[in-house]
Image (cartoon, rainbow, N blue to C red; front, side):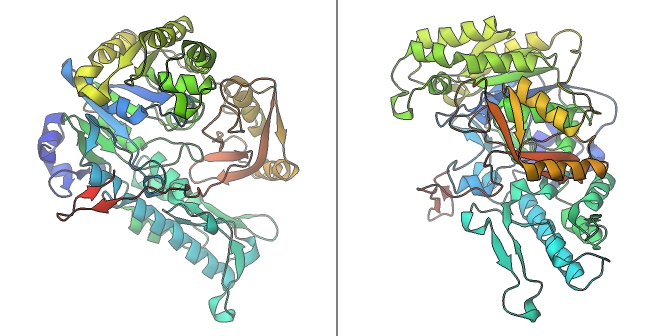
Length: 540
């Protein structure tokens, strides 16, 4: 690894606006964000609907950044911060792989600069202050039973989904039923990711709704006196973090909202910082294009001047075969027919991205068992669906050298005038109409069924004046639909909305589809990490 100050200076940042955290990572002051001057091209990297076969989105982002460096382009990547929950659950790390990684991967994956811990502390401080205000009657008409704000932890623990707090007598009051979400599902994390600066952070935090009075009026974090204290905990967490790829390109790693619950994108300040210094900024949107990309466009880009110049859609032969019905243990076997059967998911997502007005480059993440015939099918079907090009990506095995062709294809796709962006729904549409638009145009459903309680809650939100907010759908990442068992491109089905919640600080309404939960559970064989005699982390 190069000393991080070398990376900082090569990007053009002022070292006096840099706060080193050791030799290989640093935070960057918000004053370094350029409001004018050099303006790079933003490229959003997304993927096909995920499968257990793996797609390799982060690995592709890193490899592509290295490939852009190989062809002499000024580039930076912006990624989400990995969450401890999945690291100790099923993923085991979120920094790419082999020769296409961000480093120091052990520090990025474990604790990093403490941002996630600051978010959890701020969230749970708000929970404590809310309980205290309700118990002491400090907000007229607001009782403990009226609290909606839950607590968070950064560990996947299904036993905490529903809990009772305050057991043990009046000294431990208030007693109420509550629950925990994972930190990456916290509205505070979403607020941090979408804030454009400290004052915007303060304004968003003050709008967070923690419950309702008996008469139905919202109670906010400002009402319970929490905003200043939360700001004190988050004042450094809002500063973007900079690290590097294994070939030395700068990477901004900042904030980590989940893509299947929150909006799944790295921070607004991280993208704006990078765009002031690099010609190309590669930003990742979490999970598949039906989640991360759609939310990037409607929530992050639309309201923050971050409309991209192009999209890269990551696919793999293995993932396409999985959507074609092949079991995980049989994915190594050549099966051209299964690729053809699974290709409609790729074709649908190419067309969906293009409907926003963006050129699409498909990155085919190459695995050793992929046959030439299978790769040819993916390329042919992607380009026939309207992709600018479909190119093999070999970043995992070859680093930047394996992504040169992909980098050249991206430069070609972004040449010329900026695209004319269009969206899938107008901002003034009702929440119900916005959900209908997503269900039909993205999830390929024929209609939407709202649970009766969700419909009543939605009516309340619209009466409170929240109907103009964008939609952040919480749904499974394993299917276009609300049902994780429906693979490929389902059609002629009813999309089910079981609940709806409001994140007023973050600035969106999030309907919950099917049986989606906001606290994941550990798998049967949780990821086991360890350290060696020198203190190096093993098992990432």
